[in-house]
Image (tube, rainbow, N blue to C red):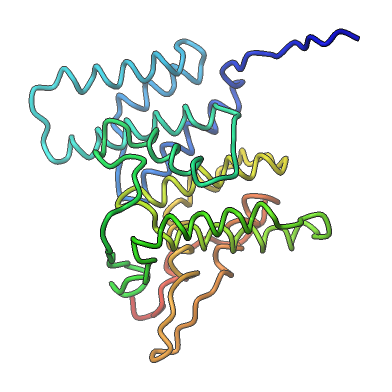
Length: 273
């Protein structure tokens, strides 16, 4: 037998996957309250139909904003949504993956290239963020000085974990915990949830899961709120961190579950929100 091996060059994915990648990319902008422009939708449809390549789609979006002399605040938000959505579609089309912190950092860098100066860089300050689902309270994130070590710890623990004796439900529960813990580190100043979402999809594919349904497309804000609830405790008010909502999201994603993913049901004071 010859020692030579033929490696197939990666090409753009088939129609169904292109469509899923774009719908997911566009839907994930809801995480930060962003809405892609009509031009982005037209460009995405041209790629989905096979009329243009992903590289051409990126070029068109870049030129679209380069030609605008001055952007309003609303247009700047659309620019972020358009560029990041295009980058997500590109990353999801790429089948490579490495279970290591460098993968998450590379995803963030590619997602926000030309959008944030700190793309791909671990944050350099402590922070908090008011969350609607918490009644404007904030999750407690890792100290920024520990973020890199926390990432390395979680990834090393995940690489060493043995999934072989778990059934599918147990597998979901473990992945949910891993992703919730990664998100709570909040390695990045901005764009943390979108980077975690893209990383999650690529990681799930290494398990052989075909995650080409509309869960991320239609329920990305629920995904973020579920991550928040998985990492928030307020014993004084009787609120305990729970991963049940995130598990519902993943059960819908993995198995076509029928859980009703309503954001209001996640609010810490449902009925008074």
